Length: 206
Image 1 (cartoon, rainbow, N blue to C red):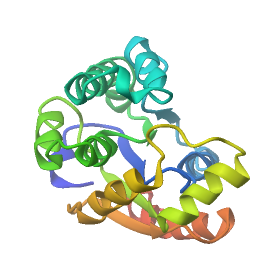
Image 2: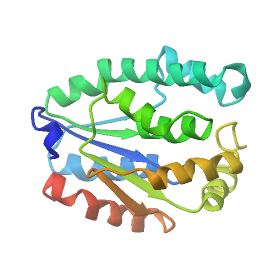
Image 3: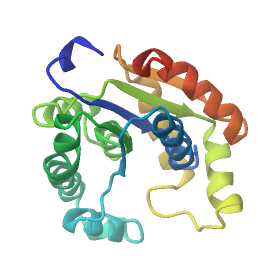
Image 4: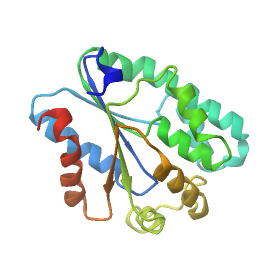
């Protein structure tokens, strides 16, 4: 556990990356492994399904309906609610929290929209628990877009446009911290899962 988290009981792992990198799949696979080891796992995501998260999801189809400042505030409000109602109680109870996106995504996506990523991270760390581990799943933007369009059969939303994701990927690549690990996710799900297990083995004594 990193030095800034010694006072809490649970473990907190965040999965980050551009759209189409397989975060949800990898969280599901890791959760099964940890549960088989007898751990209590809370798998969660941002944006949440709460009052602010629902407003954010509406922006996926029409991002122009909010200013960049309003958009950033929605993410902050959603996270405050998420931390208060889900993340902090689970960590206090000694559970494992696996989160699909967190404030690093806010830094990357809102940073690509013109905000300063470092300022966003600093503001979030005033109230949001710092993860024990951040796994950034990395793939070329073209691979992520292909997976969204062809494998999921989805139309790209306003946050998934290729020009936007190029900027997002550059910010993710620039993030630094002793808790950050990078995993090549261009392989199949099983291959990526093995790489993820290599990164979390020490944290969970696997």
